[in-house]
Amino acid sequence: MREMDLASRTGPRIPVIIDCDPGHDDAIALMLAFGCGRLNVLGVTTVAGNTTGENALRNALAVLSLIRAAVPVGRGADSPMLRPLETARDVHGESGLEGLSAPRPELRGSDLTAVEFLSSALRQSPVKVTLVPTGPLTNIAIAFLAFPDIRAKIERVVLMGGAAGEGNRTPSAEFNIMTDPEAARVVFESGVPITMVGLDVTHKALIYPREVEALRESGRVGAFAAGLLDFYSRSYRSKGFEGNPVHDALAVAAVFDEGVITTRHVRVDIETRGEFTAGRTVVDFGGVTGRPPNARVAVGVDRDRFIAHIMNAIAALDAGVWRDARPDRM
Image 1 (tube, one colour):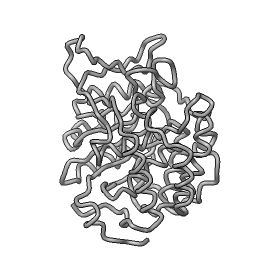
Image 2: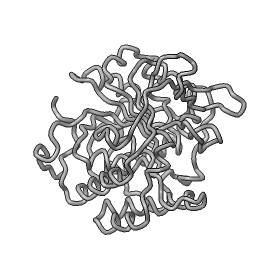
Image 3: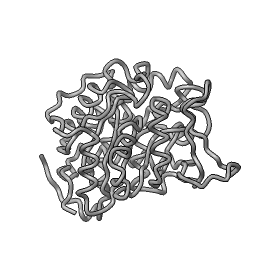
Image 4: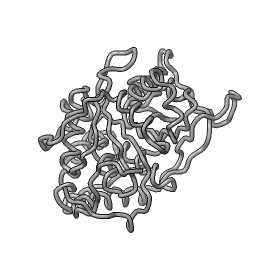
């Protein structure tokens, strides 16, 4: 693997663990995480959501192999805590990365499960770590329940999920939260600082066809990213979108550039039983419940700034301007 010193380009890096269910937009999120030069990715964990647990692990390993990011990868839950798994096959296809042949994974998964890796990495870290879940919150909830002490080692959870307005899995619920609302409730009631990057902003975080074409010209990684977005955009074009939301990557960007989104500190509760509203993130903007705020909810996004981060990160990966992704010695 090619190593280059990024100190002059980035300064100190933020320690993170990414929990994902790749998924086209998860793949772009991983590229951003490793290409931005601002994050120290301690490891990646996978969870069933967009696709099966087996596919999610394979897809994560394929993307990490493509970008030569040799970090531990722990396989997590194959189903939600209490519900059957319903994947997003209509959006991501049978494999989860449909539309082009993913590279054959050169890396292998960790001997630790996702929950084991989370508990071990957090306990061993000398500094607090930010968790970045971009899929259902099953792994995070199980880790919190099994090892409650690790919550003290978490700087914050910056998650892609939820919606104050319209859902995308149901009229009320966003896909990640709807897939495992019981897990989401555990996380939102954990007392850990949370930033919720939901559909209210990710549906505005669009990459347009001209930008996809620019990616295609940037090199091997950019061409792969563009191919992913070609397939992924089909379902959004059918819904009238002029561009393609890159949901999960926005949560990653919000970790190292808080100015890419604007937030409000409010109460968020998770509906688990409603006949029509299960999976709803009930956002109390008006403070009518009197319940204390427990999350910063994204309400605005700087689209141009966000897309610039993606373009720059993928260009850096293609140019080799990155450092071997093994965790820093902190």
